[in-house]
Structure formats: C-alpha cells, structure tokens
Image (cartoon, rainbow, N blue to C red; front, side):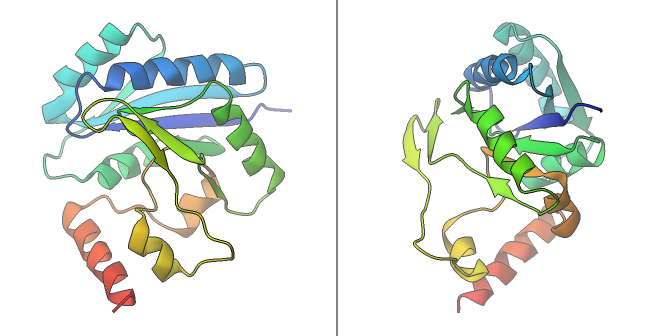
Length: 195
C-alpha cells in the first residue's frame, strides 16, 4: 500500500524574514508526521520574490524545501497557491501562510481528520492561529453553532487563507483562481451574496 502524501504550500507574497519561523514550525510538524505519511514542503513565489525566498529558506536551515517560481508579477496569493497545486500530485494539501506557526502535532491530527472523511471533500483548520511578524499574536478562528451558509462564511473569512489541511478533492470541486483580476471579481461576487 502506498503511503499518503501531504504537500504543504507556503505562498511568499510580500513576506521576508517571517518565513523563517514558519518553515521551522512546519519542519518540526513534518518530523512528527513522518512516521505515518510523506510530507513535502513547497514554497511558491513570483519571480520577483525568488531571491528573497531562496535566501530565507537557506537561513531557516530547513532541508528538503522545494521552490516553485511563477513567472507572473501580477499574481495573487491564491494564484500562487493555484500554480503550486497544479504541479503537486499529493492526496492531501495544506496551505500555511508565511508568518503563521503550526504546532508539532497539528498537521498529523488534521491529516487524520481528513483521512477519516474518506472521499468527502473536507477542510480542517486549527481553533486558533498563531502568527509571527508584522501581525504577531493569537487569532481565534470563527465558530458557528450550526452549519453556516456559504454567504456567512465568505463574509468573515477568506476560504483559502491558511493554515488549513484538505483533501485533494476540495480543489477538484472548488477551483483556485490563478489570475488576480479574476480573484478580485470572485471577491466582489461573494460580497454580492450578502447584499
């Protein structure tokens, strides 16, 4: 039986040194999850941020970090993620934003929740997000007592903002938008749902 594979995508948009603690926290989580699944780390950036990304990856001391460079300057963070996902064949995906920290057990726990769902598309988020850098702090995730509507969810959260772990079927059902203008149009459409 082949081992499950989790690909962690870290988009470098306007980030610099806050990527270092993010990669280090992911590396510790990869060590914990490694007995049960294969974990791949992929940093994705535009060609204008390539030198910064490579320098920060080197400074982090984290080994086996792949870098995916998108040769398009006007790309959104979601577009960076979309390009990386299009080249990854993992059964499970994770998005972690540069500056976010993940606990050692969270990636494996989230993967297990996804795996228990079978073929159903599922997204798992932590109860709180710990960040480092320009917006350091502890940020609780929104909670609802019942099943919220898509309009309510989109009013308070960006569905692709990390950290999150999901089954591959999620991005097969809900396409990521690579073009920044299309991403803005989608945002406007989502906000019209609430009007």
